[in-house]
Image (cartoon, rainbow, N blue to C red):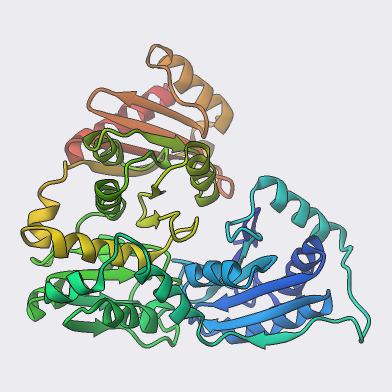
Length: 450
């Protein structure tokens, strides 16, 4: 596996792909692109995090940046730090949902958003050319700390006009938490306490980076939290990934809401409080459109990727957005995925709802998603030819070609995207049953194979 380089940062297995050398190189490129200024630096709990933090902080100072270290905090907390300090950028040392041997740099600009394509391209060119603006001994930047940035983040969540801690406290809620020993280990219980939750049942809330199970919040990895919800009698369960920007939910019966339904639930809540457009990516569930329509609004679709969703939100002045992988974006707080504000919205919704979390989940329409791939080498075809073939075959349905090819049918859809790292095409499909979702994907596979 080679180092993965994109406009928003770099990612790899530490010690093989991600080395101190390329950490320093890309950090120096980022600081040079910023032309100095202030950078907020945070990390998740990975074992290699502190080592990477030393390298990144020192390198930033060497190119004239003033560094504000936040320690182990969620990715959205660093975004809030950029806004708090009116910083020129932010770096989160985290490989998100990847296993413990991975690490990465996630790069924010001065608006607290991930770098866009143009910004990322400029930074990568600096890294490739090796033209860094290292400073003399009396011009290097400073390194300081902000030890209460998480408290600040939570205080801003509690100040949102649609969050009322007194209402949540009066509901006497019990919440189970699995933070996968990541950056949410301290953050989520602290948030729950500030929101007035009566009981918190914790598993894997020690921020040591030793993930007890695969850290991606998918159903096959979350049996423990489902069992905990049932055994503790909790009203709801919440699960975060290692950097706490993704959120999964478990109802009071110990049943997962479904990966796409965190976004749907928060869309429903925000739109009940504040009329306006919504936005999500092309591979997210049709339930997002249903929720928007329920409230008389429209859900706009972007290419896959958080920054693409953010740009679409800004284009339509959306009041809420996100991605179906459990990432919700509430622009009243900041333009970035944030599990903490997602938890606050879900608990406020539950406190106001006349029924249990499973009763609420039953109010949402059910869709089922299938994810598969086409191995291009086996077919002897290239990705662009395959996408063109599918687009032409379904031309009467006016496929969306913003990001690959997405074909909408009456009862579901199929979306094909070429991988940037492997000779494959990823297929996402959705229907009103698992069989229907798989059938849409199979139909496309058969078309391509002929």
